[in-house]
Image (tube, rainbow, N blue to C red; front, side, top):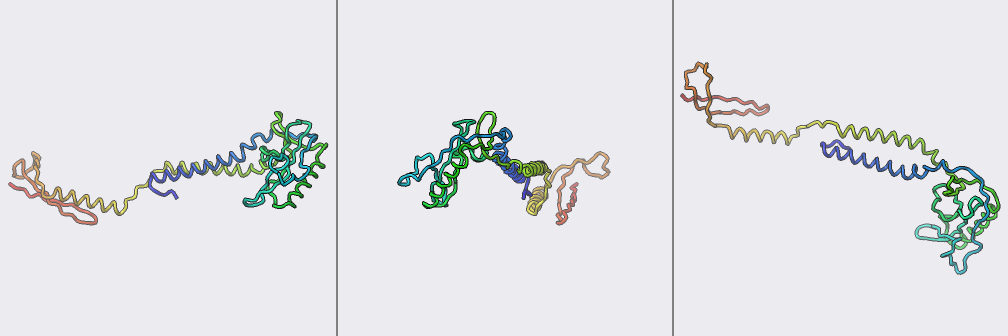
Amino acid sequence: MCNEPKNIKRGCYGFVGCVWILLVIIIYALFIIPYSHYNDYKLHKCNITRVEYPKKIPANNNFHNNPNWKSCNCGGSCKSWTPCVKMYSSVDEIQLIKNRYYIDRNDECTFSNDKCTDGFQQVHNALIESQNIYTKYINTKIECYYDDQMTDIYIVMDKMLDSLYFPLCMLITLTIIILGVTIANYHQKDIILVEEDDEVSGFSSFYDIREQIEGTSFNVEIPPKFNAEIPPKFNAKIATNFIEDPPVYSSSLDIAI
C-alpha cells in the first residue's frame, strides 16, 4: 500500500500511524475512562423510602413539563411518552438512585423506556408498569452501589470491564506491532530504480556533450621524454565515434607539424 517513492511512502505510513493512534484514543475514551472509578463503588444496602411515579395520564395528553413523564422514541421521527420512575433511599434522601453504572449517569429517572411504541394503549400499559415498580420497591432494602463521596448511587454495576481485558490486550499488542512496522518502514533506505525515461534522458545528454566537443581544437603539452620529433606544443582535434548499446568511445589525434 505504501510502496511508493520516499516522500509519499513516509506520508502514507505516517497517516496509517495517526489513524491507528486516533482509534486507540477513541477506544480509550469510550471504555477505559468511564470505568476508571469502577472499583470505587462498593456494595451496600439501600432502604427505599420514596418512589415517585405518575398516578394517571395527564388531562388532554398534556405530558409536557410533567416531571413524571418523559418522551421516548417510537421509530423514525415518531415520539411518544413513557413514565419516569424516581427512587430515593435513606442513604441520601435527595440523591436519585440510578439504574446502571455510568450508562445512566446523566439520566433523570431510575426507570424509564428510551424506546417505545406509539399509541394510547402503550402509554396506558407503561403507566401500569410504573405502578408495579412502586409496589415492588417502596419500603424495601435493595442492593446498591456508591463510593465514599456519594457521587452516585447505582442499582446495577455492569461487568462490561471484565469482558474488555482480552480485547484491550490484543489492541495494545497490535498497536505496538503496527507502530514498530511503521517506524521500520519510515526509516528504511530507498532502492533507487533507473526508469526507462531516465535512461533516454541520459543518452540525450550524452549526444549534446558529444556535439559540443566534436571538432574542438585545443593545445596539448607533450611530456619531456616523448621521442616523437614534434614541437612541444601542437594543435589537435578530437574526433569521436559513438557506438550504441553499450556506448564505446574512440578518439584519434591528427597531429599537424
